[in-house]
Figure 1 (cartoon, rainbow, N blue to C red):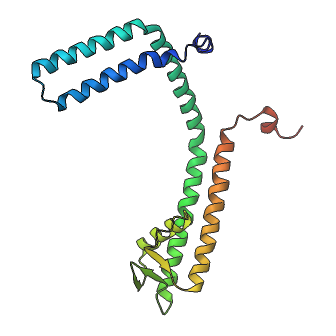
Figure 2: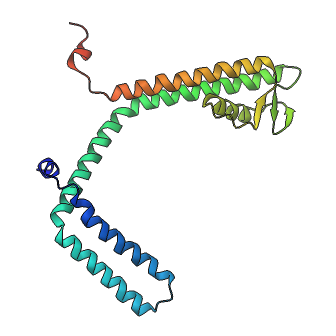
Figure 3: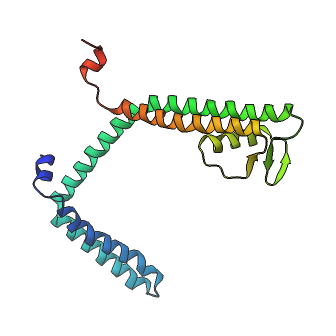
Length: 193
């Protein structure tokens, strides 16, 4: 029944009742900033709530249809989101492991080299593990804030590999997650006939 009402052109009627309700509500919240006596403010508030009540009473059927449509949309959204939990968790797990791996590698590499490989806040010094994780996250996500940056060629090469890997992981990961939400045909589940 909701679909029939929506197909019948009642969607534009939503804005006919929402607009006055929003305007009345907004004006009600703007008044307390003015110098108005509490009695007048109470009367204005009661009058505005009465006006909203009258508008809602006149369009109760449209409101019910709108709420049903919104409920159906949310139900579909949450069903779709529930199918995304497992692939999104797998993607975030792999993403996190890559960041930790590169962060640890940067920290270990910096410890075993004679000279520090990074300039941190304008000072060339050894990288701590939390800074390595932060730098790895910023590099993997290709944000590159510039507060930590590599100065040796070997670390720059590793950063380049991490950037390419991060971009590819985002592309393939999001593609896999989005592909997981697509409805599967029976032939796809059973394999080739």
